Image 1 (tube, rainbow, N blue to C red):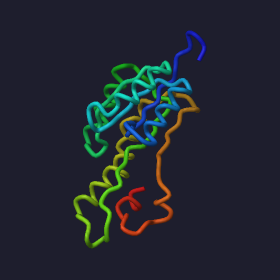
Image 2: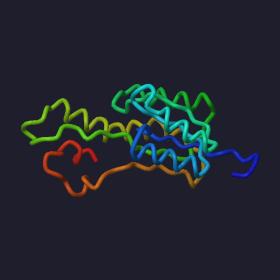
Image 3: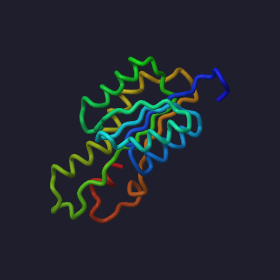
Image 4: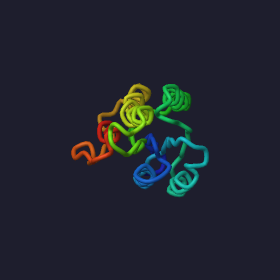
Length: 161
């Protein structure tokens, strides 16, 4: 970024660790400011600090994508700041119950589908109106090899990815 150039904004769900944290770090290195979400207070501290060391402005938001009110609340925060998103990375997810289809808890199975599938839908609905009117804007929905190659005992995860 050259001096005086506004940095683009990206939002990453599930940014506390793993792929989400690595994505946030890379986006910060590539010159993005960030909105980072995680389910628990304090989970983003290390990621936020690393991104800020790279010059990124970071907004942290507590957000469980399984909560129908959480993503619209984050969208309101972003809109109130006048931010136009350049990128959305739908990374939040959970493995869910592992076991035979007839043995796993139905509620846990459904909760995995809500997080991994419905959470992506909710994020798209909440954040699509906040996108910059720029053809380079991107939405990235992370999936898994398990979506194409099911694994025994992972029915909720495989079906939701």
